[in-house]
Every structure is written in structure tokens, then in C-alpha cells.
Image (cartoon, rainbow over all chains, first blue to last red; front, side):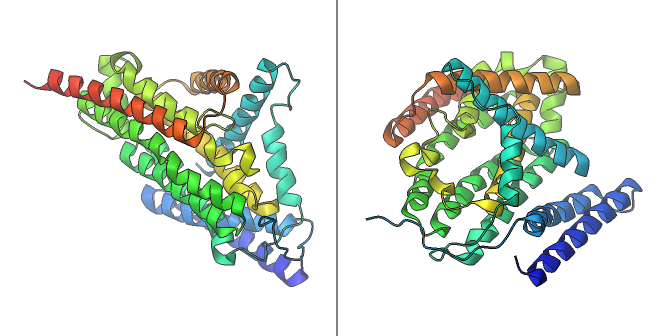
Length: 70
Length: 282
């Protein structure tokens, strides 16, 4: 994976973790309702997980053509 | 609740590992260790990854986000005692997700898997009748109301046993290597997920772990009610082992037979719901 892509993925992980952590704290103090907390986590959790995987994955390979029949 | 979300994902993967182990032992194979699915997810996340040349890039990658997102939403609905209809709406959405997984790749195996996911939507019909029967008994489709109803009247597992059996069949249709797992049959390599490898497959594993926990937790809340966490974990493992027995001892059905059996179950459930409805009439 190119260095620039890796940095972007790392930034996305950081943003996702901060977003989830912030709404968790705000909900814990009762400053935001549960549905806002849930909505932010539902939106932030998937890209955070994928970005984390993209950040630590071994390498980015060249695209190929899968087997499409004889 | 974020820690619970991560733990639910890992626990779901562990349950899928137990599922594989039990099937292997029934078939007199050593089988993988029970944490194999967790290792799988970790392994895929480290692997070299790309998007196939024949794939629709946006759909190929975006659908993984949707897959994790919808089950994260379902997790919050279950945890907050929300509507059963929302959970089953998300369950229906998962069919569309499988379809998009298969069709986005450009691989014929994936496409066949995606098409079969539409056929296997027949497994959802018993679910609707099951939900209707629950509504007739409890007068509500909110999980918190259903749990409260059971605290007064006892578990729905006893009161509405046929509905529990129908829901159990729905769980069975979602388990890998089961009689209704036509979307990922071996003749299609891995079906709809054939071309999703590396990071994309790791994301799909996260979705599968979360989905398993959410569906089993929903089953327990709806048919057993509120029980202590430890008992909940034990019950989920017991249900998984029972599903593994069913998967190990039943051959995978052809798509036609799969739909026929699920349609027959729907017919039986319709009769049951009709009887319950007539009984509920003043």
C-alpha cells in the first residue's frame, strides 16, 4: 500500500475513534440522546474498522481479472 | 456500549468457530480450533488486497461498509429494546447486501451466489408469520414490551412454541454449512463472497460475527425473555451447538427444495397464526 494511502487510512481510523469516543462520553454525561450516539457509531464504526484493516494490511496488489468461465 | 459492540463481534465469531468445531467432531474430523473464525478475520485483514478488474469498485467496497453498518444498527436496536420490525427489516436488508456482494464482483460464482440470495428470501416468510403470532400474543412488537409480557405470562418459547420453531429455522438458514446455505454452496466456490478477499473479507467476517450475536440475542429476548448475561451466553452456545447438529446431519438442499421446505413451513405457520388469531377474537 502506498504511503499516502496508508496515512489516509490512519487518519480515518483516528477520526473514527475520536468520533465514537466523543459521542460515548457525551452520551455518558447525558448531553446527547441515545439515538444520536447510536447514529454516529453506526456511521463511524464500519469505516473505522475497514480503515484500520487497510492501515495495517500487508500491501496493495495489482488488480486482476477473476475466473469468468471457460 | 462501544466495548459491547466489539465484544459482540468477537463472541459471534467465536460462536461460528464453535459451530465449525461441532460439525467437524460429528463428522469425526478434528476440526479447526474454536477461535478459528477470529483468526480468519485477523488473517484476512493483514493480507494483500485489491479490487478485481471486473468489479464495480464503489459497490465492491461500499457494500462491506453497508454490511457492517446495518448489523451495528441492529445491535443498538436489540440493546435498547427497540422494535422487532426494525431488526427483521435489517435482516431483510442483509439479503440485498448478499445480492450486492455477489453482483459487484463481476465473477460468475459471485453472481450466482447473489441470485441465490434472492431465491433464499423464502426463508424470511416464516419469519413474518412468526412475528405476526408474537404480536397477537403480546400486543406489541417492541422488544422491551415483549420482555415485559414474558415476565408476567412466562416465556413465549412455551406459549408460542411453533413460532419459536419457525424462528429457529430462520436462524438455521443463516448458519454456514446448513441445509439452506445455498448462497455459499461449494459448487459456487464461496458463493456471493468468492471475490471478496483480504480486507474486504475481514470486514465481511466482522459483519458475520455481529449478525450471529444479534440474531441469537433477538431469539432469546423474544422467546425466553430477560435472563442474566452469563445464562444468555450459555443459552447462545447451546442454541449454536443445536444448530451445528442440524447442519452436520442434514445435506445441503438444492435451491428448489430449500424454497419448497421453507414455503411449507410458512403454510403451517399461517395455519397456526390463524388459529391464534381466532383464539384471540372475543
